[in-house]
Image 1: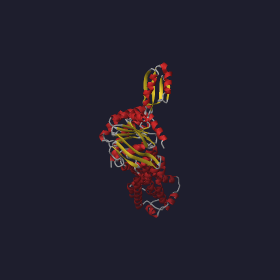
Image 2 (image 1 turned 180 degrees about the horizontal axis):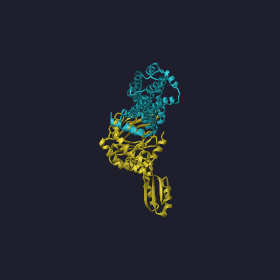
Image 3 (image 1 turned 135 degrees about the horizontal axis):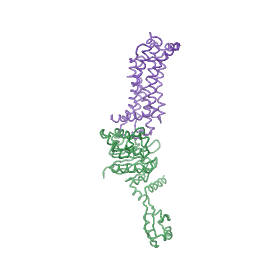
Image 4 (image 1 turned 180 degrees about the vertical axis):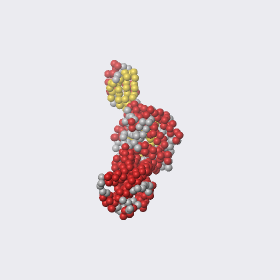
Length: 314
Length: 272
């Protein structure tokens, strides 16, 4: 396996008495879309700052693209692009000027600035408003422009901090498409988000932060399998056997509750291993079964499972 | 030093600053008042008082208060001519220094604090520019316009003041040695003082208005100089002008040294 593009070990940052990031150890692989999940204040933005060498760690170390963020900050930031939580655009300037100024700041070869800016304006669907002041843009347009600015120097590693926060669903969908587009171009994406649907849709792997500590890491699917033991299972049965089926299921040892919903019986709190026993019980009782559909747990289930665990832990 | 990045920071700051009316208005109004309106008043007032039949006793009283050195400079001139030389060459000298000071100060307030207020600083801190390049870009984006406005103001002032001087003294007064030293030596130092003091202010101020108001206190030394000259304590001879420039440069360099030590992106981002 190739070297990780990000490797953090015991990375810690304190602000006075507050522990913003506590002994964070993780690796991000080249080419993956990595989701960094957590509540507001969980330490996500601080981690991005630490990994880009704009904030000094209180303890621990990190290597990003093989470089030490604190010692090699400028060299590192030449290869990373950061979409900040607020678009951080100069609203008194035009979209075109915002992009060309940052192209200069990132050292894009002079001859390439103009064609690259024009191409980005087109890709991010801003060409028609390229000379308008950014202050007049909608939130979605600002976010697209900020994303375009993030890739103006063609970074190999992107940090996206809450890329769709405060966007309406249409604008958020557009930004998701842009993120997938940049990921398809072979870039590694490190995405801070508290939008679990977004993470599930976009990320190959996720890490969950809680009060500055990493509490889980893995693919959304693996985490769901590992951490959410109780499933919801939908049984589609012959319509006239619902009452009999409910009687059987409500007495079954492997189900927490069972009830009818939209023409199916929904059993919740079932352990995965108990599903064959539930089916056997129904078959044994002579209930005709048309379909059994276990609902795979979502990242949201994972998140709340983890959250309830950490709430319980001292 | 990556001069392309420094130039980009300057370009960005200047373009943004020039769209802030709170910055542009004082940059235009103060030089116009000092370099056009005041010299024309100097020309108009004696004409108005003589046509109204009033005497110039107040002016004589004021001139009697100036320092002996300055009085010697004005010897042989009639009251109106002496008044014109006093106002145009000496009295307005400390006021002239307010221009580079104020221009640098107000642009630096927008550049350092306004950027924080507009939430545009974070993206800039994530660029590969070094802290030194970032600081240099921001300093130059305030310092160079201050010099440009001073030079332009001086050119304008030379015209309007000479208009008054030819009428009242019978000869042009500009250019002259004191003002040349003022423009090439003291004004750049005053601009440097105006902007380096803003680095300190920017560590505390949260908004452009806060920074502008606190930063404008830097004009106080110039007001003290004006009062000192009017009351006869000092006058702007060549040595005082050279010494004033030297003091301003030393203070500015000290402030720059301190500012450079505090201007680190790791500190700036923690304050966002």
